[in-house]
Image (cartoon, rainbow, N blue to C red; front, side, top):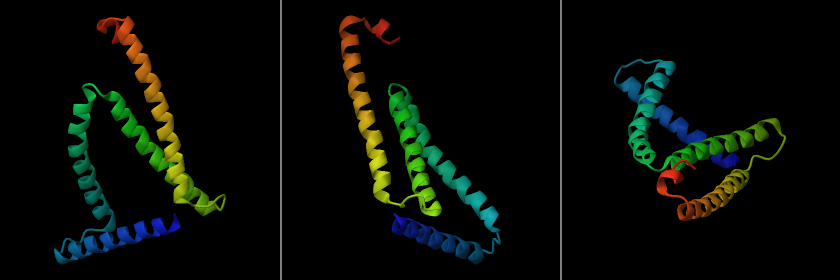
Length: 136
């Protein structure tokens, strides 16, 4: 896990250096804060232009998929935060396998939920007309 974090930091540092070179070569003279402002704004909007149409399409009949994507994203951030916290405080070992194990637990729990939900919806379809089933 530590090696992965160091590689991520090195990669980000390389990208940061390249952005600073572009800043200098075009004589923009933007400060670090201004560069963060512009780049995060552009990155966020780029992601929004990709994610929004996808979620709009999914929202028509697949709201559970949107909820799963959101929860999975939060779980990834939370898992890494726990491991990084353990590494800094020395309360445990910072280990990528812990992250994978935790996310696997979420995936298994979700699969159990999805199976139970599928069985419930199957039987609801047998006993309730569609109009009543939509309110369940």
